[in-house]
Length: 309
Image (cartoon, rainbow, N blue to C red; front, top):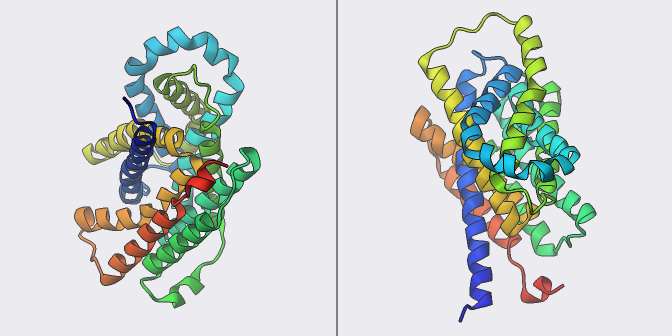
């Protein structure tokens, strides 16, 4: 006989694992994009990323799309806005922000704003209760991120000034939050692969005219093998694999819980920077990492009494 409690626990653990895998993949976005941002303009980089993802997902999702096209057309407005926020705007705003502000601003504002936005939206639109432990865990995650990005020197935080870059990264966090909440409304009759198939292609089409306009006013691109490899990584790893895992996590543990894992991105970005860029790993990285993980654990603690409400 199947144990419902065991199945429920396994379901949640799988959701947590998917969220963790996504964060590890997506954290590489900052490391890779840092080296290519000066070579490819931001909107064009976003377009090339999603165009690559679309080409890769067509053979995987075309058959399911044909089978489900009538249902998809019934939800075309929902799919349009989900693609707009999750594909066209989210990462493009990150690439835009990278041209105007420092990495500390990007990571601090982006990773702390998204969980807050998602928690607020989930409470408003899904009537999710925001328990004290959730708030305490979020605050602890923020403290951990501040420790990580300031390296324990809070004087560095005084250098934060809001300009174009900060507003772009806030827009990115807002777009991603709206996307994460919209994913929870995904029609059950649309399969995950068809869902991403429509989102990637729609988002790419929306970016196309803006990328063409950008290229008209910027120097001609000269591609190298490294640039091709980067675009493939962004298109397949960050886009196809990352979004499949993230959407799967949201379906299992909810948008608010899943969003908290985004707080691990600065930590994994540092680890990946140490491995691939040879940057130094310090004691403060260990301390801040422990604080962030503790915040995630606390934020995800939920008593049986709360579950039944």
